[in-house]
Length: 451
Image (cartoon, rainbow, N blue to C red; front, side, top):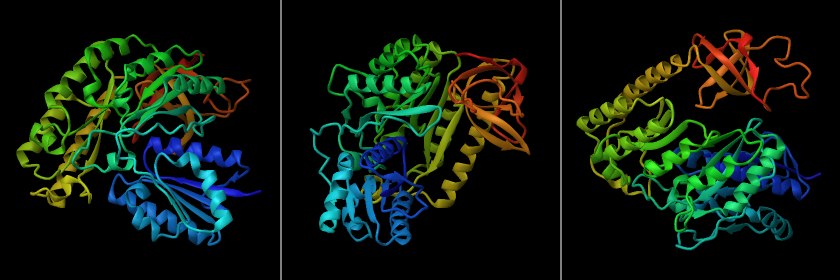
């Protein structure tokens, strides 16, 4: 049997598309093996969000060729879409850009006939382009299924290449989305995670909005949780928050992309909101959800960021009181406007500012978890972890706190067909936080099966 191996780099959208390509290969008769093993075909789904991602993409292409010099090497995705000339010099046989991944098997078969290197990259930076009809019939995740509903971005932030790699916003047909979500429910998945390059832009140019999709999935029997990927602050209107607050399956966890708390910095970034508008969105979410987990991304050391702008941002982050912040030091990216901006911030200052924010998010995260002590929380368990020499079943609450319960020789619910806990949601009372970790600990004697 022919063997194929795949390696994914980058975001959840890439992960979804890698899984779709895996299924295309299986349908064509391939056996899927780990990327570390010898295979007849290697597929690398590349990323270009940072220069480090570019490097890793090139590295994985070279690694695949070194594992089997006679294998067919396929490089797909964002890095090859934006760096086609560089990719042509790499030891890959087939280059597939975004919106062309559905042609994977066809391109492999054509190459096997001709043995001629082929680049299949369209100009996706045009106004009208169709949504690529990739979908998956299963999911490698044991507890949650990622569901891609949107592609492309029209934002053109001054530090980002993704609009050039992914093209303009295009939305998946809502009927197809509901059908796939229902299929996941039939397979036993309890949670779906909605993903897209710019999820908030779903339905742009139509009468549909993201909230319409969420409401449609909320009506599907079997799906118990709906989780959103990263969303833009502009989507949090009173209408959105009010409609979302009525949906019992929507997880009270919102990852709002912020990047800076300084209006001056936001303007240079070409973000489409002010700090005050962002704050108003968080206030709406807290009005319609009880203590939701608000998380965000922030960039430190963006070109021109003064001490005053950083302090302004720091006070803003404290005021919002995020559960967690993902902190990134600005990295110059050729091809973006920010690359040539004046007043580039020295790396030492970026590091110092990053450390301050990491300490803040560490403190906020601990305080948020401590508020869970004594509460009964629902957990979707998924894996066993070793912590301090003990074994624990671990999973996530609906507000995305990792929770644990001590594992012993007996299954929590004897007589079940599965040995794991990935097909059920369990409620339990939080009795504390495991020392030296970010996990809340449930009282084993309090556990009850929800469904």
